[in-house]
Length: 503
Image (cartoon, rainbow, N blue to C red; front, top):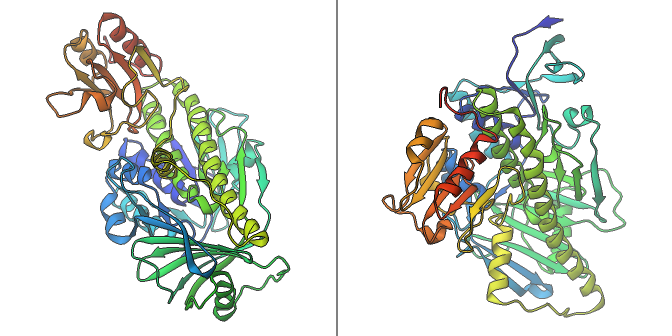
């Protein structure tokens, strides 16, 4: 057995979570080692729709162009009943971010973009490499891997588990995905369709026999979900003709299904690990939580997991932050991932309730919604309402009830480039020179008014200072900015960052 050099961060699993975590670590100055048990990249469609909030993250990461140019922009959604009659529709206009649409493309395409950019930075996925043992009773961790019939022992400081539902990192932590498996059996497929669907639109059709979901993909293809018949116990995957007949029975007409490229049976889950981290091991994506794909939250929560842990790990590995900073990952992403599961569960329940209602009545009654409720639902679906309020990395001194609160996404975060924290100051503020010297390289101080930031939209209409974390979320607000509130801000930074030498 060979002993290798020790990586600061080892990532197990090269799906979207592991790949994006690797990219964000590299961007923040840490080069991880990235392992994947599969022998080669897959070519499966899987998770497709990237939500507006995640497109913001991808833009901050410097990767947005290939996603925008290669994916289909979904701006609308339809809910249809029997006879192809529209029950309701919704769109993403006005959700309040740069990207008011979903970007839809096959998961293999998303992974290829991330792999290609990592390769340009000298990080390659080590395919055909299996983790066969993790010993956490030693310091540092001891991880045994096997590739080409050769074993190797690694001793990483930190281990990211991004290997999916059967992730060995989670098993080594004695964690389980607790929750439920929804009733019913389902088929997912990548096909072409002949049915007329408006451009840039995803559609769900419900009826007494079940439901279908059509989501557009590049090259005039579609990702479809369809409920199986309750008595269908076959293990053999359906042919295109069989799948076409099933889809036609759900939509009440000829959907024109053809060119079946990929198909799989699956079940839907609402499950999460009790803890996403023990301080040295971290669970990302399906390793830590699984949600109904009807909500389209799963791959997006994986991206957000990666963005949250990467900047924190990078600061700790570089010696710029205290290891206690990493405790916030399980707290913050635990709250956010549970919220994503709840949103997916709500959408899943709405669809299945309509199917059940149509079994009993030809016209189930739908609750009416106000414009404000529809707008809130769109932001929730877009994952723009994620909040880390209650995290130890979120605080406030002074008082302001206007604009986004600490813990929420900073609306103009795309104007804040780079990898540091940003302190946006409106009006006069004491301690700024001291802050510059004390947090040099870790906090960039910006003149909010001179740079065109709206103080009301930043949450400081009467003046003050707003700290935006490297992930674009508000970490602290001092409003107004006086000696007391700025001292509180400085203490907040000192709770997890290490100040410049001599400061």
